[in-house]
Amino acid sequence: MSPIKKLLIANRGEIALRIMRTCREMGIKTVAVFSEADRHALHVRYADEAVCIGPAASSESYLRGDKIIEVCKKLNVDAIHPGYGFLSENAKFSQAVKDAGLIFVGPSAHSIEIMGDKLSAKRAAARYNIPMVPGTPDAVTDRAEAKVIASQIGYPILIKASAGGGGKGMRIVENEAEFDEQMERAVSEAISSFGDGAVFVEKYVASPRHIEIQLLADQQGNTIYLFERECSVQRRHQKVVEEAPSSCLTPQIRAAMGECAVNVARSCGYYGAGTVEFIVDDKLDFYFLEMNTRLQVEHPVSEMITGVDLVRQMIYVAEGRTLEIKQEDLQINGHAVEVRVYAEDPANNFLPDVGTLQTYVRPQGNGVRVDDGFEQGMAIPIYYDPMIAKLITHAATRQEAIDKMVRAIDEYQITGVQTTLGFCRFVLQHEAFTSGQFDTHFVKHYFTPAVLKGQTNETEEKIVAALVGHLLQETKKTSNASSTITAQKSKWKANRS
Ligand code: ADP
Ligand code: ADP
Ligand code: MG
Image (tube, rainbow, N blue to C red):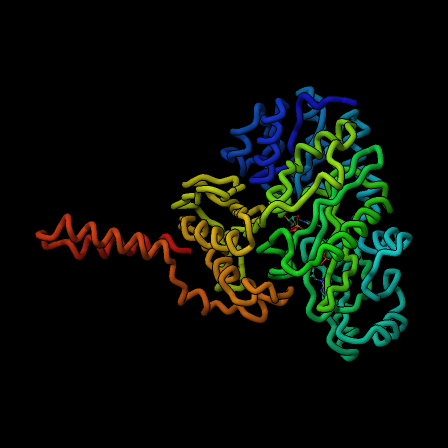
């Protein structure tokens, strides 16, 4: 066992802060690294020490593993937590950290390598008889052969980049006539985005749900599952609303998926926190999609329902401790929902809308958790992911967690940039979502920018009404009462996003 006394967080924003908070609770000193664009960022201020590692572009800062390791040596750091994105799923980095005599708070280079490539992941998982979507077993080299397989599987099919991630590198092919053209595009996208042109064919599941299992494994071979997260509400194959537990699983299917996920972890000798993603069809048959070998964006919903601090457990595992939590100790406590608050314009195809946070007031109260990295007056840099915050609510039942989320969204005041808050509110109140009858096509089926125009914000309307009443009483006799009210009202309106 090698206790960690000082940990460097090779990341930025909300996830860097979230990791540092647990470190502080554990008495571990923290070191932040930052780019020139993040000089005033909260993660820099929160850390015990902070070092600038380069210009804004992540290729010159947050992706410079060599510089990060150098900082560790200079500051006597014992361990590196990579967060998500950036270097978190870089096998070479995991190895370099180890070779430098440091602890990588994450899995081995070997596990990352196997699971980082969707095809090698499937090959490893196949040894454990994990259910898989029909498709080509290897990268497509012979197009004619791939076409034959595609027509055997039946259209529509999906062409996927083996090195893909973040919802990128996927093309749906509706019929054989489109096959060649889409294949061309998929390969060139795979090369330009991931530097690897390997693609494969998979059956396109018509109305799937995305359900994933959270795992924790130690270096002694113990692996447990912390139940599932439902992540079917997506735009551009990327999640925006997540919840735990899923509204559609039975205890039997949950256990079967959990055991499958544990076997996927075993197939690559996994330790640390990890997630096994599945797609689930309308008959509740589930199929292995991929494994993410890192802490995931949506991990808080699992923390809320299990009471486990995943970052703390990751640190224990990295120190070489044996997991103290046993599968039978875990149970689902209530329901948690997370919405991702992005600086994006839902009315304009969810395009990033970076700028300065003119107003930034977080929601509060019982059962509300905000993981963010910004304060009022700060600018959202154009160089990185435009996520402002994750808003999480936890309550005894699904409906209460949803109601709490709607209330929290209404309390959140953000101006200066467009955000996904109003969109998330729409999702949470939609009948398909509240009834639990939805799939990954939720946005395509139900969302048009027009739905946001008619949205009323109840809390806001109530506050405005109260304010109007108050002002009317106070200024009954003055002649400019109505203009004061109008000005106040438009201020409230402007706070809507
Ligand atoms: P999660 O499953 O945790 O929600 P996302 O797909 O939303 O993961 O990705 C989380 C972060 O990691 C995002 O910033 C995304 O851009 C980044 N990311 C994930 N996979 C890759 C990849 N293969 N290459 C580059 N960035 C990635
Ligand atoms: P990434 O590495 O980008 O996260 P995934 O394989 O996890 O790639 O797929 C991302 C999303 O794309 C899934 O959550 C799902 O919505 C959709 N998807 C992936 N594979 C299929 C499939 N075979 N059929 C239908 N949808 C799929
Ligand atoms: Mg995925």
